[in-house]
Amino acid sequence: MSSKRYPEEFKIETVKQITERRHPVAEVASRIGVSQHSLYAWLNATVCQGVKTATSGVRQKKFVV
Image 1 (cartoon, rainbow, N blue to C red):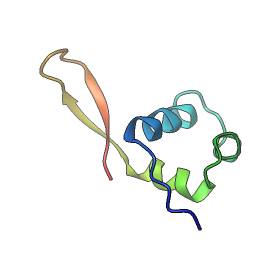
Image 2: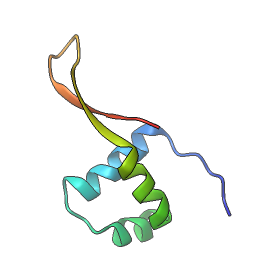
Image 3: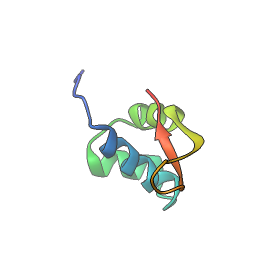
């Protein structure tokens, strides 16, 4: 079993493929070479904080590990 670490930005963009673009988890996992289990863990760890950034005032999703 691999213990490769992925950057937070990579995880966020991958989760967006599933949540915003509606790509199936299995398809995304196969395409990027990550297990479906890992993708579901990333999905579960993604929490919409609803916090506005100080500079833009825009609500952003924050990836919580």
